[in-house]
Length: 355
Image 1 (cartoon, one colour):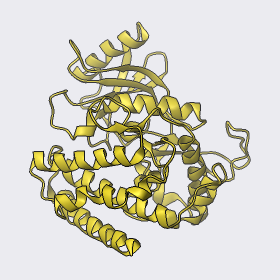
Image 2 (spheres, rainbow, N blue to C red):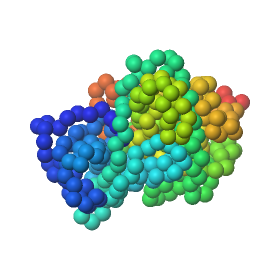
Image 3 (cartoon, rainbow, N blue to C red):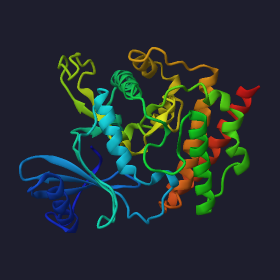
Image 4 (tube, helix red, strand yellow):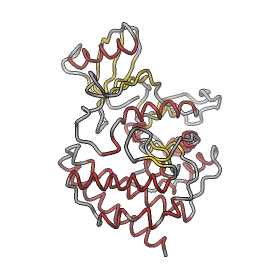
């Protein structure tokens, strides 16, 4: 795990560190936190970097109280993250190691998760220091890593945690439930939609034959944007864990973090989550890296329909979550405008593809 670090103030033990001490003892036995640092960047769960007296650095993530306002699919997100990291690690992706997960329950008002810390800096923070050549090579390698993640097959389609009605035996049914849940959330939180709810709810029916082209519930991170990718420096010629020689010069991919938004479904949805503002399917290097692991990835007519559907879904999620998160100011105004424009744009794409 890596994110922007904001030192605790004042330094030294505080209430957060006292709570962390208790949780670490529960998970690891007798350990002592010598420094706690709040990690920024998250918009739902809180995260804290814990430095122990034995030299280890760990990340403690804590969910809001179980009764806090949330979207339907957001219950048990840290359990989803723990599952994602375990499955992705088994597929050969670099991710934090899961040390302990504690669901909310009697005596546990908030779910929490203990992870190893991934050294490095996020791609977002390093962006200005990357050359075009660095960027191209890293995008290719990212494609290969996401293909490894997608090689994992889930037991059903949809969200993996106990979200009533948000998983199914086929992708059309699961995606229909996912989309309609966020529309219900919009109604519950009083969020104005950028298009009539009825027409949005019918999208999976109109394009059900395209959704039915997905025949395997692949693991999808769905939030692999640059803020959730950790980079590190490596001199030329250093061999990475896979045995291949790193060809990125000083930069390499240290791993993926924050897998809490993961689901099982169409691997193409990953292209939407990693580039929510753009069109990752137009990135030849990224696709080449992906196809080096999974040659069968195709971006044909059916795929473009599905990509548009997933872009509508993500824009709606981002729009609706602004109310329970209490976003404000310029960011809230930008999100309101952007999400409306994005939905309108993608509905036009779907209309054109349907002809």
